[in-house]
Image (cartoon, rainbow over all chains, first blue to last red; front, side, top):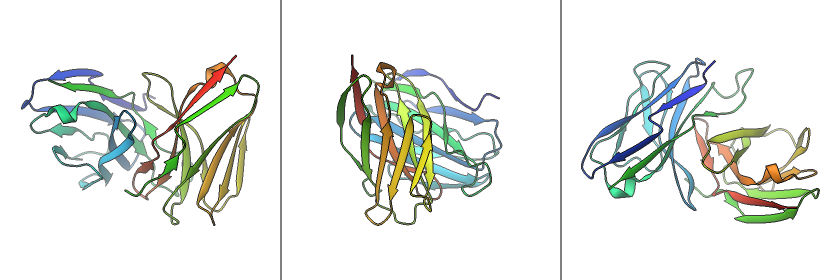
Amino acid sequence: NAGVTQTPKFQVLKTGQSMTLQCAQDMNHEYMSWYRQDPGMGLRLIHYSVGAGITDQGEVPNGYNVSRSTTEDFPLRLLSAAPSQTSVYFCASSPTPGDRGHYGYTFGSGTRLTVV
Amino acid sequence: GEDVEQSLFLSVREGDSSVINCTYTDSSSTYLYWYKQEPGAGLQLLTYIFSNMDMKQDQRLTVLLNKKDKHLSLRIADTQTGDSAIYFCAESTGYALNFGKGTSLLVTP
């Protein structure tokens, strides 16, 4: 049981480049979400999904796109990287809250992104 | 989202109890969570409490919930140096989490 897998772990991009951060979970969780963590800011929600084919914006969605074609995968796309997107990115998944066996949100190990 | 508030720093001596406080914003939050983050690592779920509970105990951890004041606390008994980390309070928004900025706990020998 791998849990939530994020790739890559580290990435350096040049300003203007695009890339996709991968997130996959093998727990058949309906809910998935992306967060960015910046020093002194805690974690802020970028985008989330409540099931395959359904996505919505969080607190800081600008510059990012997501899609959810399968239950397992929830990739985050940076369209044109900017230095302000330098951050640590975390993906999380959860069963539908209220389901029996709800044990909270499981987080991936993160992707550390630097945009130069 | 609206702010989940936590104090930024807490320092305790090894063996003492630590209490980390949090105020949250959404009275409809079903679950409230405490996560731990060690340097350079991801987030580890420590415990959570359902909104219809007042208290939850799990080994050295005690969570107290005051719904009237929207106040959540995490007590760590017999704090050890390995407990040094950042602790995040989070409320469920129904589809994702709204986090506080985190409390850095330093445990000194």
